[in-house]
Amino acid sequence: MPLKLPAGLPALQAVRDEGVDVKEFTTVTDDTLKIALLNIMPTKETTEADFIRLFATSSLNIELTLLKLDTHTPKHASPEHMARYYKGFGEVRGTRFDGLVITGAPVEKIAYEEVTYWRELQEIFDWAKENVTSTLYICWAAQAILYHRFDIPKYLLPGKMFGIFEHKILRPELPLFSGFDESFYVPHSRHTEIRREDVERESRVELLSESSESGVYIMTERGTRDFYLTGHSEYAIGTLDAEYRRDVAKGLPIDVPRNYYTDDNPQLQPVNRWRSHAEKLFNNWLKYYVKAD
Image (cartoon, rainbow, N blue to C red; front, side, top):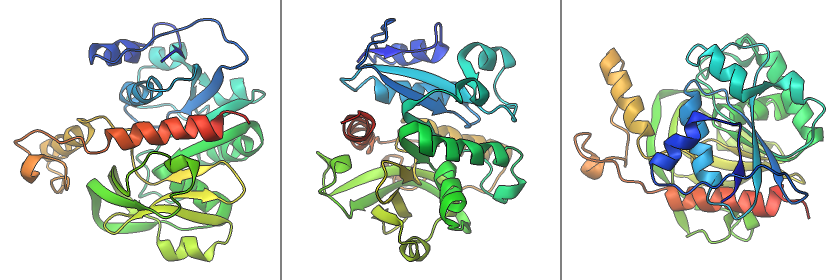
């Protein structure tokens, strides 16, 4: 449905080329949701397309602002792209947003304090608490905020958690899960994990969804509209395939992503088991948590 995006953003045309109907608008009204996307994934345009694709399924008008860190220069995005389509955190510090999404980042194996932009990210975490109605923290960002806010640690896995995994809902009465089936699938692609026992020890954090294979998935801070997601519901159908073939080409140790390809055969097509869940998740988030009462 209607989106207001940075003018000329290439990802918009990429999504339209897939056949997704994305309508644009130019005039912001009182009922327009102001959503910010802090994109710290290395593949900027792929991530932009992922969220445009999801937000386009909403019936709500959304103005999307792309955010970048002031203390970090991406290696895999052109300076021209970042300068033209993104705003630095310093530019929006005085702005209130209805919603914020903070993506994952390929720094899982590094101690938080050793991440070069850790101090700025901590500042953004604290700023969001006061200036954003509801925030989604995804993958590494979820781990990082749980560490920053609650001192919940991450643990290095013996092998990459890689594939599509079945999940169950622990609080099905919540609006976040409106229209969900009893079980649903989520892509995961990470080298570290948050453990259930650490979450259960922190009374301020509630576990909402988990998998017997991939562990905790959705958590929230009680009394807030913030959610922490360890998986990548936003991923497009070909993302895990691209990651797998990239690592194979580099000679890196990588298993075939589980439950992803037809018959688990990487010579066959992936099967999208998670699209309907992803659309429901993001639409419920926008409708029930981002949209002011």
